[in-house]
Image (tube, rainbow, N blue to C red; front, side, top):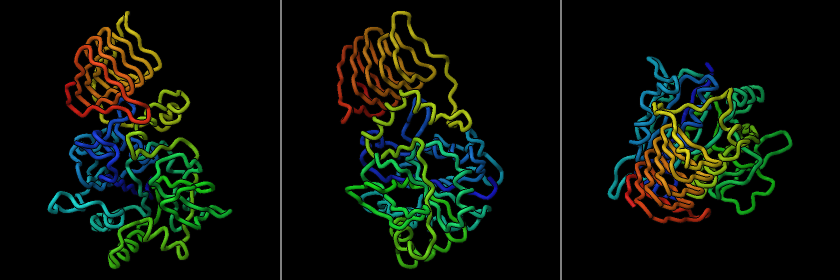
Length: 371
């Protein structure tokens, strides 16, 4: 899509993913057996024909750098444009990296990059959104409506507590931007995806920085509601925002529903990720694998039910895995029992161990742990 440029915000925004973000930011948390959370927004951009994407970094981003690399797996490794990992916009203070203050501060930190954008319009998106959306339709609706800003939202208010909500008039114009909101009845939940022109974006960045305003929601969506034509694009397909460990667990388990899985992994809009060449998964004749999402390279000799296994997971004889998420290269030894457990990469569960969590509070095992 020649007229649209992608900007993805990848930052340490939430602290409720617990052990999963001890060594990485939310964007690079593994999801759905072989992907990272950022893959879904990035793939939506690529599938819409966007050839230039900038990823704004902040915080613990080494894992994300390793995953994205040059952008080759998304066909974004190019001499001109392509994938650009933008430098962190924060600075070191006593006690660590300064807290994220808002999108406008982040954009001000990469203003020189924005000036060099070749396209007329920019799509801004958070990296913690699980969605497969036809962005070309959103862009066309933006052009047809004559809006200054188009905000993608959903009529489903079933999502995290710390999100933005919109009130719309009868023509789809956003009349109010609300946060926080105890009762979102009659509102639309923002998916934190916005389209606007490059020129307007630069104008807003300059104005916000001159007044020390950092929040896109407060300084733009709320403050400019009366002067800008801010319109909605309502997406009623599947969309999940991952803010907490419960969000992560529940949304992962939803993938076991074939209807939801088909919607996310739409054949016309594939989800791209970093390739890893593994052998086919082996299930022992005496093993059991029922209602599971299993990636390549796994060895299953025990019992696995209602679970998600990433690449390279091994489950030995006698082991029982139910309602679990086992990430890459996790090893479960003989006669171990795991229920409602989320095991990060390279975890080793010793023989005869019993680990049980709950759907509302799953047990999480940190990366590289030996239990």
